[in-house]
Image (tube, rainbow over all chains, first blue to last red; front, top):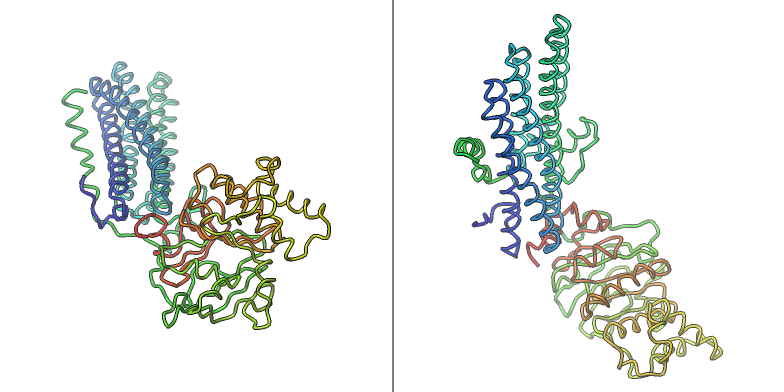
Length: 240
Length: 295
């Protein structure tokens, strides 16, 4: 790989250090791409009732896990070899944290795939799928934007992702209420609706992980930890 | 993985394309201005109060208008590329520069409120209060005992042999050397290992009960184990002394110091808490230097 000298991580005296940081960044984005695809496929499998695709997602999850371990090892080696400081240190630490979030997103995709298989086998009317589609699109956007914010070191975009999380939580609450209504209308819906509820819950968690990634991007760029911080404070930090 | 899934994955990610030229977020401070230091160069409980210090070698300035406080019992590390003036500045603190004819020092340098460069100042007394440890261990060609006892003797710090013995033992203990040498105090100091010699020099420096110890790259000639011992010692000594250390090892500065001062071409660019300097430095030059972008 030829390091780009204009890249903020590509201008060290040691070219090998440049290569290592860029490789870490690229690998992380590659894993992000895979995880995005996993969620996308999981939703497709659920909505289209495609059991074959759902099986595929479950086997691909091993790939996600493998990537997590590889990236962790690479980050550990960079710390051992280079003792990174300042923004380099923040990049490595953030990647270690964010990779765990991506892996969890991968797990949520696997969970959705499991319910897709179950629901396909049960073959009931697709109640609650509109909500799944809606929240699914929303959290997919968040994951995509948080990875994009990472690639471009865009703390403002990361902040927007953080703000979206609240909306996802609201949408989840409202979807849960409508599913509850379906269940009250006809108790035979309960099994199906509970499965859909689990899917919604998984999607809501994906939103949380996207939010965590966004927080880490802000840490990388601004050097301030915005986890467990009121939104106004995060806005102030990003706006500085 | 079958063909279908790999196609899907390839469609979604295209990660290489995401690495595009970015808006570079670096510390905002990029300008290096004479007399301007970002961060926290001043301290409440100042042992040294240094204001507008300038040092010239002949006509050429080596230190350009630096103001800094060094607090009591703090460990402050001076870092910066070669030739940035950190050693020159360190040597001003006990007038070691006096021995260089072409060297002139301007500005106000106060130790406990008294001018270091006062014409009436006794330099020997000053250097007893502000001790120094050099890059290369430089023990006298005498016994281990005499190396440590030398200072207390000439300063008349001990009236009896037993008092002198106590000072020697205490100093060697503080320097973490007592157990290694207690049975051979009469042996020649030059026969010790490099790490032991350096710790002996530290014992010699602290034997005269200084208030400040200046260390000019004290570990650059030592192996990692001896380095670790000296660093351990610095942490212990900081309970009783103020320590100023010049080091080329960034990790050493990060490990031992409370505050770190970054020098660049004779300017004092940034002084901050060490934890801040190594995670979120305020000045771009500091960041570039500590992260290996120049040096």
